[in-house]
View 1 (cartoon, rainbow, N blue to C red):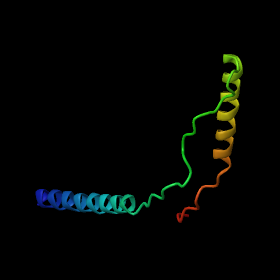
View 2 (cartoon, one colour):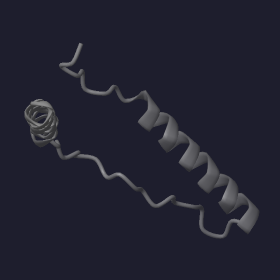
View 3 (cartoon, rainbow, N blue to C red):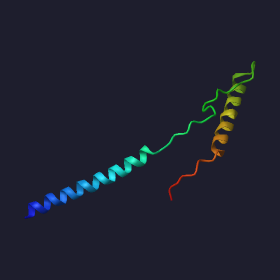
View 4 (cartoon, one colour):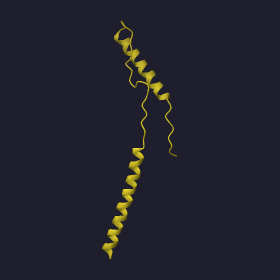
Length: 81
């Protein structure tokens, strides 16, 4: 009798795990990826004839500006609550 309840309990657990796995995997497969119109990586431009120190400062400023611009973009609202 104990063996029957053990097997029955095991089948219930396997069915529950299968149901939860199916639910989680179906949520992942419904994700839509939207292509972005803007280039993700821009090559910094420097002034010709500038010293290496000036060029590195210009590149640093341009990278900082592009990071700040990326941080200002709003994320799409999610449907989850």
